[in-house]
Image (cartoon, rainbow, N blue to C red; front, top):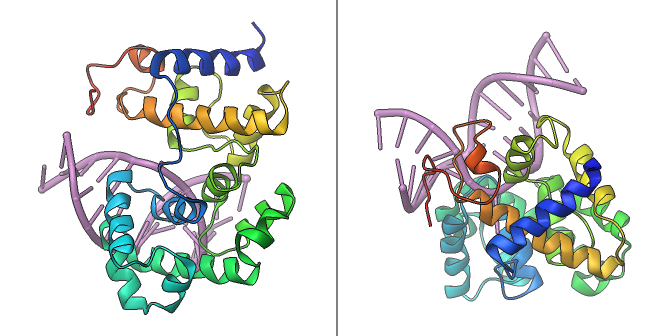
Length: 224
DNA sequence: ACCCAGGGTCATA
DNA sequence: TATGACCATGGG
């Protein structure tokens, strides 16, 4: 079987195993963007606590975050870790968001331009930018994260150490034959499935057969 | 007590 | 280009 075809097969198996995931877990695009920054190298359960803090203060919006003091912002973000860094990154993001005219102005940009704009923000790297492009703007961009690298290394479809951009393009080239909207929907579900699967496999055995696909490993720390 | 999590920046070679 | 230090909380 051609290598490119295997990326389609893996999707099929994941979907048949776990079913649709309804991602991103957020109620609106701005909340997606905030969550994308807060979840950098951080478990989602910790991010949720910070999101709750912002909501309780009625501050999960550009204006409130922009108006808040550094100390106040850091206090809300505390449970998500790296709170001083993330407070600065969230502020950088909000400044950019307002300068670009909010969702209205940003939605009118072509994907390449929007991606370059996001990457110009200090604190927004490739994965965070792609989370935002895919889950807040419905753009057909594939998100590559640590789970993606681990799974596809185990499946023998990548070497694991490739640059982010190399792996992203591998997915986007292999997953073709669809319209932009259909691609966005596929990429959305695919990444969500990879993360879901990744939470239930072990991370200690580099080439654990149980962790490749279908079936959970006895060495997993998080069994369903 | 230790390991890790839905990364990114910056300094250094 | 490619490593390494650093950021910090909460759950297993």
